[in-house]
Image (cartoon, rainbow, N blue to C red; front, side, top):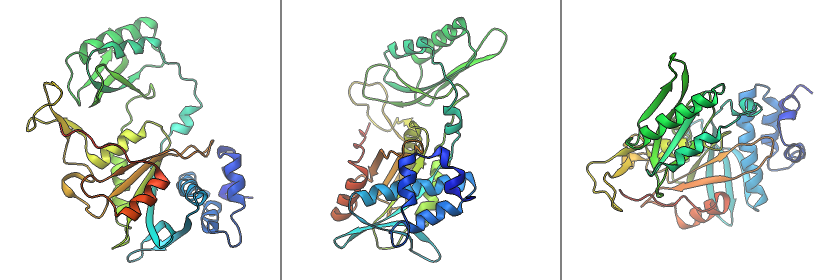
Amino acid sequence: MNGGLHRFRDRVDPDLLSEIDAWIGRHPLVRIRSALEARTDEKAFFDALAEAVLARHVLSLGFDVESEVPTVGNMTADLRVSKGGREVFLHVKRVATDIDNRASRQIVISPRLRALEMVPRPWLIRVRWSSVATDRQMQRLVEEGMDFLRHASVGDELKVTDDDGSDLGGIRVLAPHDGRRVVLHIGMPDGFIDHTPRMRKRLDRAFAQFKPGAENAIVVASSDHQDGFDFETALLGQFVERWDRRPTDGRRVAHGRDDLGFWSGGAHPSSRAASWFRLSPHSGEFSPRMWFRQNDLPASDGAQMLRAIFGEEEPPEPTA
C-alpha cells in the first residue's frame, strides 16, 4: 500500500493504472510495473511512468518488448522492440516540469494578445504576461509588443514594464515560419521557461546508453504540450540569422540553425532517430513527434518500425 502505484494513484489515468496492475506473472512489462511500485519519489515514479506509457503503446502495436536490456558496459536500453528479426533499442528520458501543478490553476488569457497575430511578420513568438495585469496594462503590453515585432529579429526579446517599473510581461521571437503573420506560442504568465538545456542533457545521457552496431532511438517525454519546440531546438540547434546563406522566398534574411544542437555538424553520427512526446498522466494518451536525421536515415527496416511506433517524421526544414 506504500508503493508508487498507490501513492500517486490519484494522478494517473484509471484505465492506464488498470492495465499496469495486470502486468504480473509472465507479462513482458512486469519489470516496468515493479519499477513503478518501487519508486515512491515523485520524480522517479513519473520517469518510470513515461517508459510505461511508451511500452504500453508499443505492445499494443503487436511488437515484442523487453525492458532494461544490456547494451554496453553497465548500461542498459530502456526498451528493446522487435518483430520478425528486426529490432530497435529505445532510450527513454523525461524532463520534469511543474506544468502538472500549474495546470490546476485557473489561467485567464486576455483576448488582447490575439492582436499580436495581426503583425505582418513570419515569426513564431513566445508570450508571457502578468496574471494580475489590468486591461489597460495588457493593452500597453500589446501595443509595445506590436511595435517591437515589426522590427524584431529571431532571438530578440522584449520586456514591458508599467510606469512604476512593475513587470507587465514580455515577448521572445523563437523562429521563422512559413506564414505571413505572427503566430503565438502561449506559455504561462510566470515567465519564459526554456527547457532546451535540460532536453540536451537528456539527449547526451541517452546516447551514452546506445547499443553499438544496432538501431537506437532517443525518446524524451515532458508534460507541456509546447515542449516539443524546446526538444527540437536541443536536437537541431537554435534558430539564428545566417548571413552566409542567400534568403529564399523573397525574404531579406536567411535563417538556419546554430551549431549547438545534438545533431549539429555531424555530431553523434550513430544517432539517427529521436522522438518527443507529451506525458499526460491523467489521460494516458500517447501523441509523439519524431525526427530522422537528414541525409542519414535509419536502415529501412528500423525506419519502418520507428514510423509504426512514432508516426511519420517531421518534414525537413528549408535550407534558408
